[in-house]
Image (tube, rainbow over all chains, first blue to last red; front, top):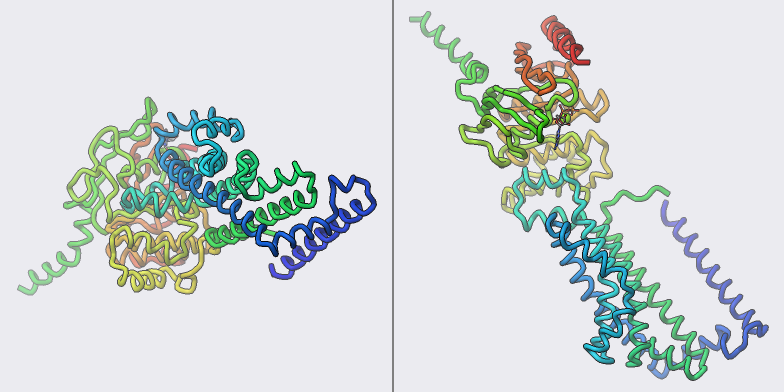
Amino acid sequence: MMRPINLLWLAASFLVTLALLALWQWIANHGYVSKVFLPGPDRAFAALTRDYSSGKLFTEVGQTVLRMALGWLVASAIGIGLGAAIGISPFARTWIAPTFEFIRPLPASAIAPVAIVFLGMTDNMILLLIAFGSVWPMLLTTIHGFSNVHPRLDEVARVLRLNRFERVYKIALPAAMPDILGGLRLGLTIALILAVVGEMITVQGGLGSRILLAARGFRAPDIFAGVIMLGLIGLATNVALTALERRLLRWQPAPAT
Amino acid sequence: MTATLHQFERNFEDAPRAAAKTGRKPLISLKGVGLSFGSHEVLQDINVDIGEGEFVCVIGPSGCGKTTLLRILSGLIQASRGTVSYRGKAQTEPASDIAIVFQDYANALLPWRTASQNISLALEAAATPRAERKDRIAHLLEKVGLSKHADKYPSEMSGGMQQRLQIARCLAQNPSVILMDEPFGALDAMTRQKLQDEILAIVSESNVTAFFVTHDLEEAIYLADRVIALEPNPGRIAELIDVPLARPRNQLTTREEPEFLALRRKLFDFVLRYE
Ligand SMILES: Nc1ncnc2c1ncn2[C@@H]1O[C@H](COP(=O)(O)OP(=O)(O)OP(=O)(O)O)[C@@H](O)[C@H]1O
Ligand SMILES: [Mg+2]
């Protein structure tokens, strides 16, 4: 029942993508926007295949993905760990959580100068930037998830005399999982953005540096090639997270279509 | 000689029931129990002894403190006044052999666990060895008629099936006492009657003591050995009513017995006073 519908969707989005590419090519060919700023997809893909065969593309994508993943993992560990601790404890929720409301709205770019002062133009600075920026959604969704376990489940745990560890591991964590996964997804998007921003600031390799340098050298096809790769990374990580979500949340009733 | 033997036999037969009724050695004993939330007095001076194997139903108008009373018995909350003892000891926290069937089965089950895994939770909590769990689970699923649905998630089950599953999880605790708070309130009439008979069978089979809160007066009479009628503001015992109907009970014949109809009339009159 699901299959044909999914296939149709897939085919439709593929067609839309093709149409947009065609439109892009058409605009570029007719010179509505100067070639210096807008290369056609043909030239962008030419830049991509060139860097692919030289191995440069692989290195750059690898650097960016690695930074994004590391920063995201650090943020996940902190966000879920701290979020769980705060979510379980009413005391912490009353006294610590409000502080977050003050720190959270700070844009991650605002802490970049602070991070640079302490860590210099280094990889660690980028990691800190990513971790700081992407930890919030995970922290807040985890707190929300852990503090909103249905009171009945708490009672079931008490009646069955589960110990503290079992209560967290067998009741609260799975109950909070849908919220946590939502936070992980948001966090990953932010991590990718901040990886690029960090690379643009430090110019230590990666797609961010590439795009920055290409912009300075007016190499528009290289910029677009970098942006395309970023889009693909975003897409791939999203697909991976969706698969993980499907697996972990397969108990949830299928949404009515 | 023969006369004394005959006499002895009769006494012997009557003994267990009589012990339960007179509460010579009550399993649960409430003395002067009261509870207030702040200045709001919810329960006042509750005195009742519940014998082993007895089936007690509680009725009373909405808000009279039935759920609160059940929660005090369970050890989930503490009385403000009086004493609650279970097996002669003060009941200060949930005991591992007292199970609760909650009315809102959908919230009481773990939605991320299948039927088997939900039952397993109680076994894990009791540190039942892994090797034994599988057989116990299969046995319990069969007992509540869910063998075919072992691997379904609660969201894939009907309300009646979910409530059966919750009952199975309670039975996995090997309880001496089952507390039930309007367990069939959300189910349709047919499912409700089926589950009533299933719970009676389970209780008589394993000599479990049952404490059953309900809005449904006929359900109370049908199930109970004794009905506690609570009156509201503050909640207190208005009457303790013995139900001398024969067991096993039958959905058709029991409900037609004059004794049943008389009790039904009596309870209706009681409830109407508070409408
Ligand atoms: N946690 C609480 N804090 C304050 N008041 C409470 C609390 N729990 C229950 N009450 C009050 O105690 C009274 C009895 O509530 P309870 O839920 O025991 O009634 P009930 O007989 O089970 O009602 P129903 O038939 O509607 O389920 C009500 O007036 C309710 O408002
Ligand atoms: Mg109630």
